[in-house]
Image (cartoon, rainbow over all chains, first blue to last red; front, side, top):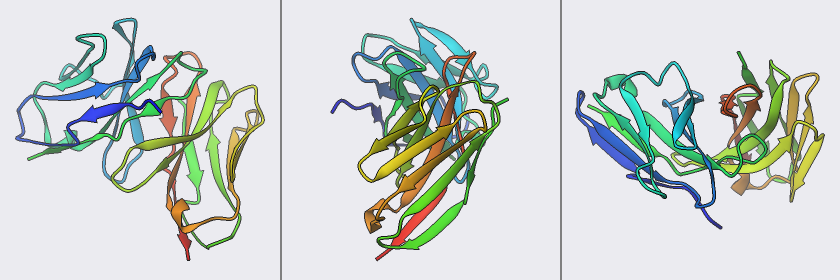
Length: 114
Length: 113
């Protein structure tokens, strides 16, 4: 069964450094999402992406964050200058048609900021 | 703003028992509701999706119901097994946005052999 893949599985970065999290969504899917889960807390929405542009972003997704679909297969989340509070599990998800189809999640990238 | 609540936060049952997990949401204008399973340190596995026009969905030993007007969903697990031990998350896709999911905090289920 097709799946969403995320790399790396664990990223350790010094505070203030830039980090790029990578995702390969399911190939025929059109809607892409990033979520994050701080340890012990709810999974929170960050951003949705459709037709090569952001369709919605949360208040968490400030100017330090950006997303890109650089080619037909990858979907990336960049954090420009990481803070300690960015430490979390970051999940990528994709969906075939948006609201009427399930979102499929990757295994996540655990980001640790030192 | 959509809020999702799951009760109980944790549940421990003996193997073989049938059990019900509860989820409630504040805004009934939803596209769908999805139940996920999360194992420790792992991603989210989609279990069932119920469209807003549906009342229930079944997959194997799992049955999920939806009462949109009252803002409630239940996940019924029949004949529980130790391999069912995990955290179960409920999430709703609210209309009027990008179909983003709003999650509950989850119910941590332990099935004891």
